[in-house]
Image 1 (cartoon, rainbow, N blue to C red):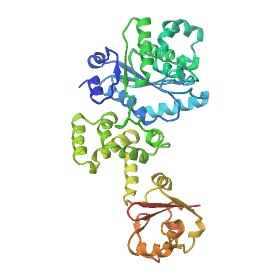
Image 2: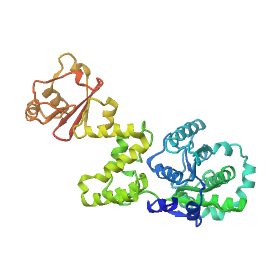
Image 3: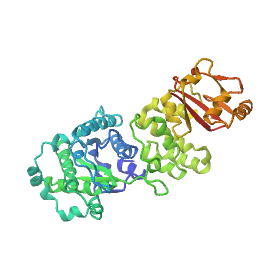
Image 4: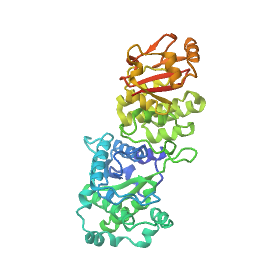
Length: 423
């Protein structure tokens, strides 16, 4: 199938201008997508347009990722209920650099016939005068039409309204499209469905100023089967930066996907074929307890974002939750794995020398109600120290048991973990 057909069956097209199917199906063209440098890391929702560029490149089209070092000074009102806080120039520059580095992990800049590009719109916007911009761009936009855009209409209904700064954003985005058309022959812009009005502005500007047809395509807003915004359940979508969201956390995020969302997410967030996804769909429907679809989804996304090494680390960390080896992990990784389990602080001095009897430690941190109960649990095989079963009630816990001298993992029964932090 061609690029348009590929995107369509994956559920990755919310709307598109009439000529989009022909352009992507019958030609090899240049396509761009913009990314706002509002943070140092892209998040998992950005992965949909990123993968859109990747898919288009694999189909022979040339992708351009635009990082908005210039428009980031303004802030996009699309999908926002209030004015964005303005970032400083140094903050934006730092974010631009970080986002450019991330995009470089996904796009092929060495492709022989269609190498990807990353551009920064600050390179032209910062040198454009206000008078020049209003004369050459602003005159092609009517306020009447701008007021019909959803990003504007929604804000006008609120008490705070919308500032002239953000109101002008769609003109800047349209100008970006025109510049990329002039410099690189770019004929299509892609983005999220909340960007539809902005994208049409660029299409119209190019048609009116260059007398050629340009196209726009937008992806749907990603939601769960229950209609909840993607990523909302974890207080915000996971970041693609491993320093912000570890490979383990990203893996667990997708491992916890509901059955009804597995197939739609595999279509959007993987390069698996139609046949492979159909097979996983049958497995998910017939044997849901095996969670084969969730595991495959978690593997595909984690490897895509963090590589084979990141996937291996995530799977090793996940095994710890089911009794896997702890000794090969760092204290930081253990904190990540057990961030949601009970924990207790304990002075390192308490475990110096001959250490502390295991039953006493269990009672002191609350894993057992008393030393007596702790002894019974230990004798019955229900206590684990760093995921190793301990039956010996005379076992002493020392600093040598602490991972990096900082953390001890206790477990009662199958899944009742408790972290001891040595301070």
